[in-house]
Image (tube, rainbow, N blue to C red; front, side, top):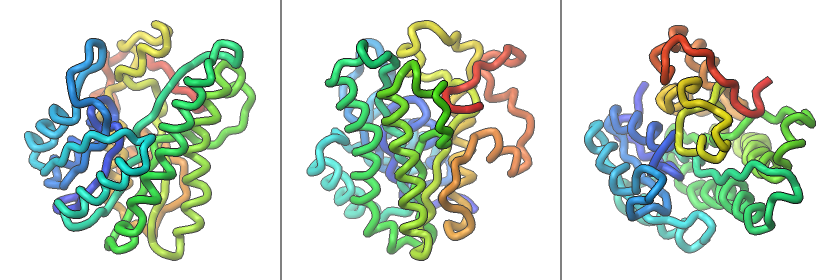
Length: 272
């Protein structure tokens, strides 16, 4: 199975993992709505919604760049309407957009707490809610959240309580919505990388992780593709790890995803 002719909504797709997922869908000939805020080149971050759209179309797909602040209900609802008007429906939603701030309680200003919860949890809920009427009409509907397995270990909370709560909120959406929508045939799953991924988010780690010890976003994109092309009634409510998804599909040589093949890999947060 592939995504040819399918319509995906991908949040935070102007760069990083979101862009890689959008490009991979484009290679199949999919339609991709790119929901993100960046419309002008940023001094420190690569990509805009327009460069992402060009990449999707260069890969072979159709793209719709939509400048969207995911914290604003009206903008999300307008983006969903534009997607349906342009492509005729929605087959899959990828909730990739995320805000990160790794600090302790005293060091985390409330504006950062609010941003992470607005972008990570609330936007995931909002985008799913806005897309759901159209997903329910699709033949093989999927919601995929880029969020971690729910491992309630204190080690994942003690250094960045606010961030962990926000990411786990996305995972709790998977837990609840999968059961809510199971009988209606909408798959709701989570995907998380086993190792650190070389994206702009590494800058938020204050130099703790050398990109040479990371994998490229394409490993997550290929795993997402495997999930989104499966029958939606076969798998829902699962917290999936990228390399495990690929191994299940018979892909065991992962060196091609390494930034520096042979270098030791830095494990990602939330993965024991």
